[in-house]
Length: 246
Image (cartoon, rainbow, N blue to C red; front, side, top):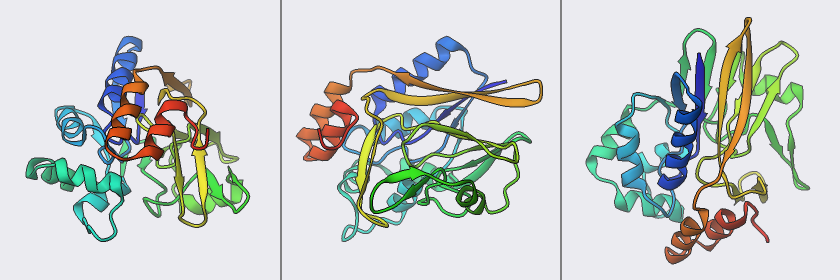
């Protein structure tokens, strides 16, 4: 079975459509969406309606939680815009999504880590930089999850790690936002250096999971213009280049 992993769409429907066209061309048997699907300056309602029509396994990310518990005093511009565009039907659908899940007997699903939807699983934030998490850090963040394959999102950084115990951990990267900056823990940036949409395909061969991290070009310039028109210059820079400070 070939499974497409997608995450962090952030309402970027053209990027999602490009990814879907690519994995349809390659041939997959199932799709897993790891959350943070709607928040952003793009097409939150249309993206929700697209996702609601799919027979995919889908999780809630931290942004779904934030939209369902919306506080205008503390909401980010991305959440505020998405919240303003959604109807009750989309909120009802989001309320059915769970932060953790599984796919078959082998695969554990989370948006951030098994312990929290805003925690980074494969990256560690330090004042100087964001680095690859150590084996001990990853093991602690797994919280005892022993599945052979763990799929996570949240950091937008595509990465595949094989642990000493033989578990494969795959972050497919972000469909809709290739870079961002955050102040949580301390100021840091995540940059992929490419405006392309990202996803992954995992499959099992001879009892072992393999993964492929895939980049897909799409009309990112039009999404950068849209972000700029809606007052989110940081999103526009990220979408245009895959960097935050170019």
